[in-house]
Length: 235
Image 1: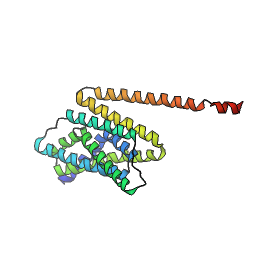
Image 2: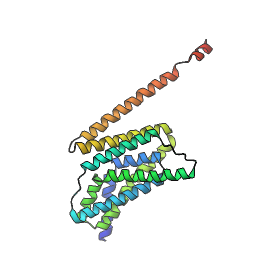
Image 3: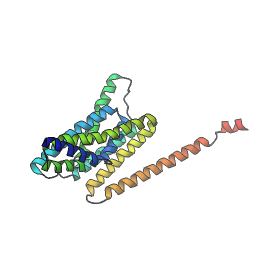
C-alpha cells in the first residue's frame, strides 16, 4: 500500500511539473526529426536512469547536486544539436544499414540530451524531495511513468506536426529550439539565480523569427517580380 501510494503521488507530481517544461519541447522537437518509438524509448531509458539517481540521493543524502557545470555542458551539447539539425542528415533512408545507424545515433542523441537536461532540473529535484519521505521504489516508478507520459503527449504533437509541415520548416524550427535550449542552459549555468536564461533565450527567438520573416518577405517579393522573359511575353 505504501509503494502504491508513492507511485500514484510521484506520477501526478512529476506529470504536472513536466507540463510546459523544456523537456516536453525537446521531446516534440526530437519527434519532428526521428521515429516516435526511438524518441520514447530513449526518453524512458534516460528518465529511468536519472530518477534512479534521484531517489538514491533523496534516500541516502537528501540533498541536490550542483547544476552550474551540468547546465554549461548541456548548453554546449544543444548548440551542437542545433548545428547538426541545420546541416541535415547525410544518411540515405533507403539503405537498411544506414537507416539502422541513423536509429542508433538518434537513440544516443536523445538519451544524452535528456540526461543532460534532467540532471538538476526541477523534476529531478522534485523526485529527490519525494524520495526523502516516501517509498523509494514507488517514487522511482511513479516519477518515471509521470515524466514519460507527459513527454509522450509532446511526442504525439510533434509526430502530427511532422506529417503536415514541409521538411525545411521542420529542420529550421527544430534548430531554433535546440539553439534556444543551448542558450538557456549556458546562461543558466554562467549566471545562476537570475533571469539571464529566459531573457537571453527570448531575445534569440525574437531575432531568429524576425530574420526568418524578413527572408520570407524578400523571397516572396522576388518570386512576384517578373523575369525579362516574362516581361517580353506580356509585351
